[in-house]
Image 1 (spheres, rainbow, N blue to C red):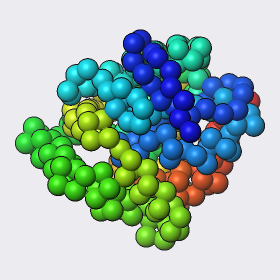
Image 2: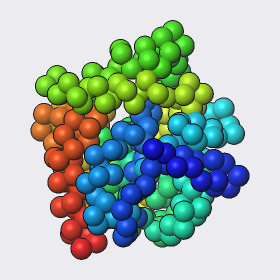
Image 3: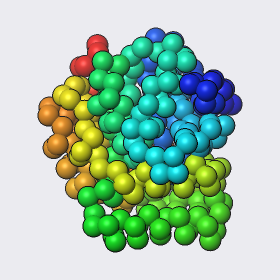
Image 4: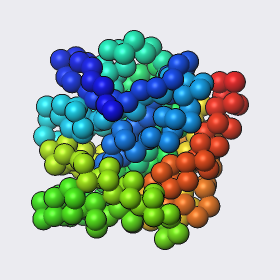
Length: 265
């Protein structure tokens, strides 16, 4: 069950378990804190694991701008961590959450012990304006036409590999069906304007991890993000789709543990 906290006069919902160094989990555009259930369990023995519902998701109040930037979400994250008394954290962002994580690390570098970007979305900001607007409109039109449940029926399986177990597809579908249209629309508009390559942080311990069968943020695009970060480690998880941390939690967590053993001991 989600807990709420007031951060800079904004309510943020989140899930938390465990004790130790903070491990903060940031979900993607069609997801939510509930998608991190396996990681909340697996890492609790060593870390204080915190999965937020981004502004406009779950119990979290939306941001003020109709078209927020990644920096707006990053600043909301900073206020959220302040409210929880978290000074520094290992920050894990998946897909759209990777855009937020990168922006947070750029704006608040001293607060990030290590950065992990899973299947990172690059944003549409480098596209020509017409193409950028079309991609944004396509996502919003699909939501308008079918609502969250219909969106989930149409998109959930595509976030996983063709070989994904039925339970993983059901999990992705369930979490996506619970999105709020207002928060999703804000996040899609952020994605439409974002460019992760213009918002990457200074050099720090960084892991980029992705599914080898990702059809959303392709392996080629994930490698390009890793190439743009000095000294970044990279792990491709063979055969897994975009939501690799849901499809095969053990493989995803093994990559994170190996990286964290080397970087924070």
